[in-house]
Length: 89
Image (cartoon, rainbow, N blue to C red; front, side, top):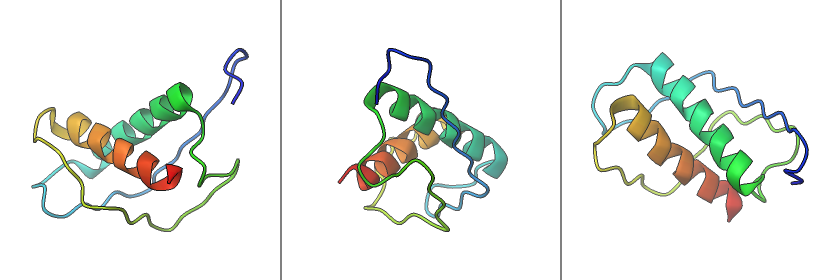
């Protein structure tokens, strides 16, 4: 991705469902996940498993590692890294 020019990244997440990490505000988690994924794509480029227009009903990845810090934002950051890694491999 050529980051020398302005790039627009649109990531839309309709629903986030995570089990085993306690109760979280689904809307806040979705927004935080969108922000974190956009940041990763801006920093690292599109992962190899994504094309320019991708719609997925669900994403399954390796077990998530999260230290419990940062609330919804911390969980979303860990989840974004895991999703990015899943598509990058």
